Length: 280
Length: 241
Picture 1 (spheres, rainbow over the protein chains, first blue to last red):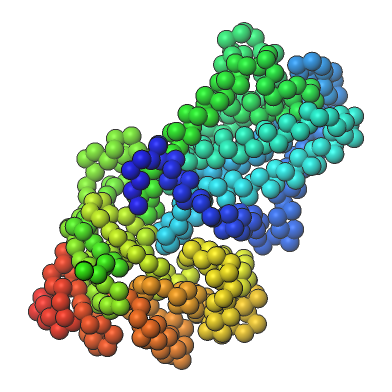
Picture 2 (picture 1 turned 120 degrees about the vertical axis):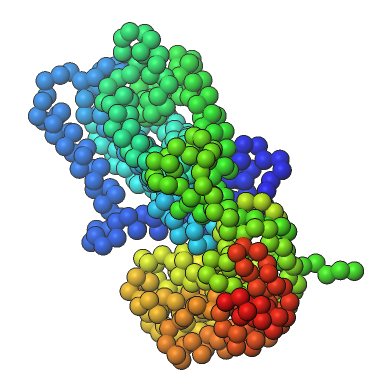
């Protein structure tokens, strides 16, 4: 089973996924059902929870506070609620991926310790189950944006690029975090503690492009969450190209991080794959 | 020309790391397990098993029987040495592993089928056999979480035994359902064995092994003590009890 020419363990992950499409799809749907079982509304809760959060945001900022003239972003001022909406929706998926991804192996222990199962598939179906919710949320978001006068545009199509990259990026992240969390519960707690901080450090609530001084603004390029949160806004609000030349630094940093994560993930996964059944 | 063995162990060693506590575990992520105590479960095990053989594996608790079975089924991996398994393995060990409690019996047949490496066509072929064998009546279309533990085992057994394996791994400690169903299981196992499948049989009962096996391996402290006829193995096992 040992691969002689396995570049950073990536070949192993690739082989483990070959021909497993149906199995992964079935398990991803199952994951969704499992999470909300016992509730009368079932998986609908996956939508109700974030929609409720967004409703509160709308109420607080558009009905309650109403004081400010919105948030400036790239080319224009946008109502606070619209700005938050386009940030929160990707954030729901990102946080789900970071937390759920890191827990995924431990939560699907039986696949590792009792079956001969391609363990890397666990991360794939876990992120996939969250993606269904994200796509539905985006449909709702799109409707709200449309009703608020941010009508359709060709730039909206970039959404598919961002959502795909988001899936890939956080999947690659979980190749590192899931084996480590399965190995040590302390690592899992570490991730859970970081997540709140990450939220405030990312552009969900504020515009990371307008921040002073310059070095902090540049530092923000290193937070990949911003790439997606601001990316959603580029698709739906400002109609900026994903590869616009004004944002080359951000794009390059993001791709460098993605490459790093993929290599690190493959390496970590390979290192831990064979000892996981013994330690779980 | 020599026949290719269906299962081959070449000087297989297995060590388990024993972490003192969670802190030691967390530290081990960064220190490459330096200074962590190890427990050798297998100390260099070699054997060859050929197509159609039925081999009994005996030994006290902790002798390494489960570790060997886990490696043959592909769940666990050796620390060093080489393992070759050529063929589809059906393990009657963890019968209910991989079931999704919220899916129906039929859906679980498919899920488990995929997990065991079958495709839609192959599953469709054996689906009716499984349903007939498990004999769950209308429950087959109910979610598995509503099943009693006996029913779950029956479904699990029915799936595992019907996938047309090349290698059958049986742990005798296995008890499935009531006496009637147990007899049905034993008959089915014997039927599969008669069809020429390779069998690995773990048991403490001399009678059970004598009935099915022609060869036995006696494990002691992670090593093969005797590999020979059932009689030889039990003589050594009995003498050292």
